[in-house]
Amino acid sequence: MSEEKKITVREQKIKKNHMKAKLIFFLILAGALLLIAVFAKYLCPYDPYAQNLMDAQLPPSSAHPLGTDRYGRDMLSRVIIGSTTSIFATLVLVAVITVVGTAIGILCGWCGGKIDTVLMRISDLFLAFPGLVFALAVAGVLGGGVQNAIIALGVISWPKFARLARSLTLTEKEAPYLMAARLSGSSMPKLLLKHILPNIAGPILVTSVLDIGTMMMELAGLSFLGLGVKPPMAEWGSMISDGRVMLQTAPWMALAPGGAIFVTVMIFNLLGDTIRDYMDPKQRNK
Image (cartoon, rainbow, N blue to C red):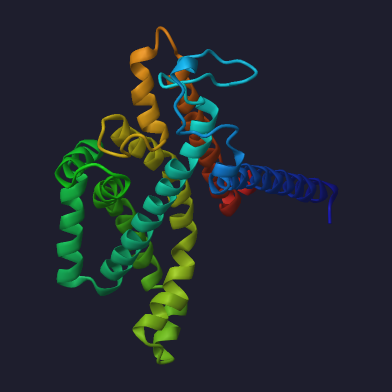
């Protein structure tokens, strides 16, 4: 092997190790967020729902690092306990739209015909409306609550996964290995689950991770407008809504949950970007 090739191989190995370390770093950060959400009630320094009007709107201090709200509730405790609702509701939503959208996309790409036409025209109908506006309409009809907010956003968010899965399925459908699997007598469920799904899972996984930040902000938006979590349950979007009228006198009431959303969305977006680069050979060889 020539010296130039050795240098190239060494550089590629360094880039790959760097990307792997970056991926592990963001996985650790995302895992830390999930652990905080799981053990939130044990990490709160105060009862997040206990009211004490004598301590209302206290600025950040050693006793209350993020201050208190208008009812004297500790903002740090409410941000921590709010992570459970905000993060898990978002993950449930992303999981639902990923599974439903992927299943519909694979079915359309594999079967074609009238099923493909009908389902894709339905997806076009949902894509024709501004997403959040349509979600507001659906949530308004269903009423408030976390479950209804998830349903409202799920109804308008599955088409992107359906179209992605459909295009990937159409590509894999004509691959030589799949024709060989057909000739071997494999049934349709086996072809879809053993051959199609594993080969299209990479791009779908990347898309779903990148979608976590978007879905979190849209869930927070519905709660901000009163169509998500109902008080007194702590959720970052509703907490921002409660604190927006106090921006001039007690800005920490809105900045604390807003900062939590910013950090969480940034971590999941960077994780999604890193997973995409790690799984793309072209990016690794640049």
